[in-house]
Length: 433
Image (cartoon, rainbow, N blue to C red; front, side, top):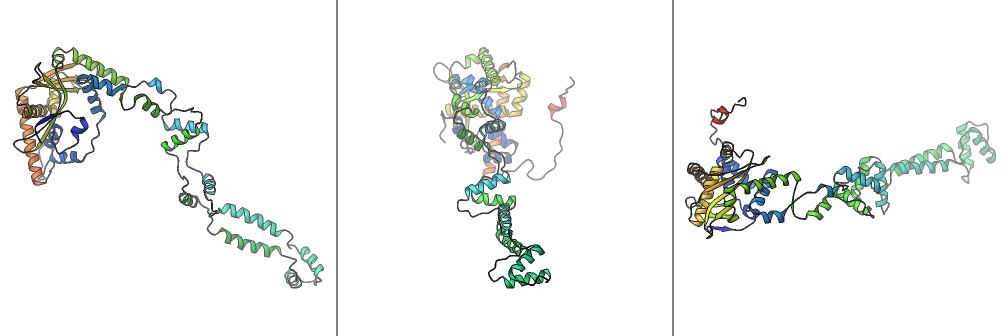
């Protein structure tokens, strides 16, 4: 890639992970395996990263910050629907069913959807056949007195036993005028069993047929419930928080009042710092630099927060804004070692030199995240830059070897056992002081 600066978005800058930046080099030094994992990670900025991005924008690009950010006004959302409980309460008022359907609910829905009358329910069939059986049993012969009355009409010998009398009545009843209760009951029992075949009985039966008929068998999801509420809310009684939010803020990045106030104080304190204010008076923000490392041939990149220029437009310094917990000289020195800021300083210095031919000093503007949001400005020493340069050169050489070998080992590639001890910092970090 030709050595050059580009004015591109942050997403465009990070699009090609094979072009190596400061974050990738830090991962390589942790282990090549961590770098390889980074290559396949979906980039998702953490809340801390998003807050840091907002701080950069407020301090370095105030017009961009004004256009892209806003502060939430919670009063505007009073009465809007936000939680699932809110949705359910609105649904209750509108008479919308949103829970898991009961068996009776499913039955009703299946009947409504079953336009071809393909399915029958066991309880319905049982009830229908019970009514029909009762109707068929009316007028049947049951008692001995019934038998004798029929026998008298038919001129049958009434001195016979009940079973014999029944047989005699059947033989004499050529017009089939008489029916016996037990026979009708048996016939209807057999018919009922036949009718019950393939009827729906269990909840699983109901769910299976409901699925075939595209009838809902589970509770409404939140989005479905929202759609149902909107459809039923003909008087526009209910408003949804996410809709109101979109109407008010569109594509803007919305900060809480606490975040907004903190960023405002951090920006104020940065601009009240004489050296920081002077450095930020002339220059360019968020320039993306791309170059090819002359030793390894690896394509590299960096994105300078601020490239200070003189009145002739010549770059004279590199500034990086860091949000931190402790901006004191001792506290921030620890952050430099922990997060690899020394490597970053050297890498950025050499990257800018590859494009401009100029060796520029590297400055940190450290701003505390918590109140009183104190700021401090530091220049990377020559010793720090040399240490950082050794680190990033080692990282590039290691990456070059990994790419050639097609291997990305972890901490102990040969399975060694190492002796471990406390770090020097932990040995002298006495919480009781």
